[in-house]
Amino acid sequence: MKLKTRWRGAATVAAAVALVGAGIATANAGTTDKGAVPARTNTIKDPTGGRTGLPGLVNAANAFLATLSDVQKAEVLLEFTEENATAWSNLPCAGTCRPGIELGSLTDEQLAAADSVLKAAAGTGNGTGFDQLKDIVAADEILATDSTGGGTPPSSSSPSSSSSSSSSDASAAPSTSTSSSSEASVAPAPSGATGGPPGGGGGMTLTYGSGYYYLAFLGKPSVDGTWQLDFGGHHLATHLTYTKGRAVSASPFFIGVEPITYTDDSGATVEAMKAQKTAMAALTTSLTAKQLATATLDQSFGDVLVGPGEDGQFPETKVGIAVKSLTPKQKKLVLAAIRPWVANADDATTQQLLKIYEKELDQTFVALSGGTALDTHGDYVRIDGPSVWVEFICQTGVVYSDQIHYHTVYRDHTRDYGGEFDF
Image (cartoon, rainbow, N blue to C red; front, side, top):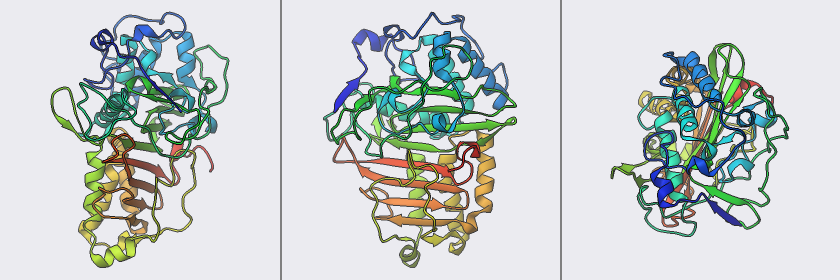
């Protein structure tokens, strides 16, 4: 097993740019050359063109594309096929298990334009949406410089630890392309992933840090066509699908984190997944002994069930306690527990999806295994409805072995990838 981290000399960090928010350092863009000189070098003051919603996102996407060379555009603009859409992972396997352009290869101007795309696409909530994306990426930056540490994680201003995910192997690899045009193409062929999951030996090259996150558009961004925005890296896989002028899906959405808390450059403590953990624990700890007896499963879990490479593999039978049997207050807690995952999408789409899930609450089930506090290895909870599917599990930390870290996934039985594919 090989460990690969992006070089960080003092001069590089000092000259680095902020990625999805302040305080997240990426490698000096000048260290990597991706094709010809970018097509545009003028700073774009408002990439959205003053628009909100999908029109603003499309404007931001086009502004980002305008900063790229033709070779770079070919990495970003890909065909919206099942093979490309499902080629994602939560593992630290860089571009070998996910499509898109590596953020660490971009110039300062290109990174700023990519940042504007993510701001336009994601939710505006505190601790969710865009705010949470930057916190997850920052946590991985902390992991980027140490593969064997343990104990208390350091501050993000002085990173000294790294981690790997214990989830399933990466899903279907991207297909091959030789195109260098700016039109939608097929994802480039993967390279370098030759082993199993981290920690299990083999030849997988592990890549940590904010430079190893990837942005792709599956289909050409437009206000009336069908396309998908993909953004991901270690512990993160975001898929937002648009068709006929509106967002129709915010799933699959995998999000995990290690360390679960860290100190940022300002000295503040950051708990990147506090929204998910707090809301889910509020639900599980509200259950009475009798309700727990019904909700608790007679099996243990090591990871989420419907993670990467498991599209459509939902259990045939819903198990646990029926939400319709809960009190009105507990029903509100179920909806509140779903919200932080759905809120990775823009605010309007979040509300639209939550209305659907609220109408389906009486056909939804909650199941758990382990403890209700969600603070111990193996603690697991699941929300399974006609549409919504959310899983949350605690795992022993890989680097910080005296602590836990989280793996979670949000899916929709009928809307994953915009419902474009049959699984």
